[in-house]
Image (tube, rainbow, N blue to C red; front, side, top):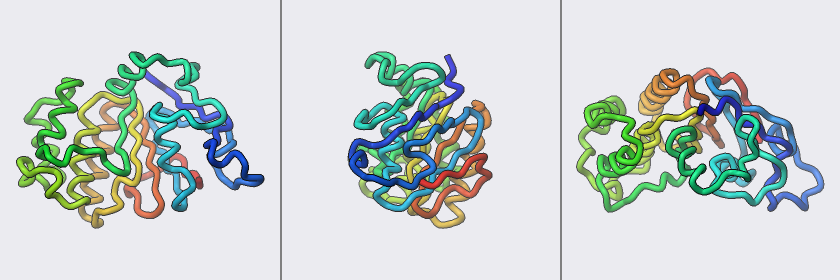
Length: 216
């Protein structure tokens, strides 16, 4: 089953609950992220952009308000249902990447793909070539620069079907050339699946058209 809309209904992180006045296009508003559209959430540091991604992806529930996937409140999902959603509907690139430093770049990606069976090994290697890191396939991730690790993490995030992909600061350590390569691959894969893209950023972000831009 596809997820067509992510509906935020007056969401507010618990940590902000005692603040008397919050200026935000997201917090305490009624917002809908639609599948097939690109959404950018710009913010200053400390305003909760990573929390937002973790709320939507079900990793945290320390918030007030309601988040719905289509008509279903995500608090109602069981652990097994979340497992299916993480395999088939929602992909995420975390700001801290969450790669395994002792594994090679290729092993980090294949580990995810073994769960989803979404990409062929040839396709995965082509992704590495497209992002200029084909020479890092056999290198332990812990020996890569953070920018190289960001590209590995994106490839891993693309190794599954998704209706929405969440990207938290995906190009923060990339120059304009490599940022462009990442953006091109991201758009290519999202368009093939008719997926929605949600990007959070405190500065640099993928240079593409955004249907909606919000200030967090």
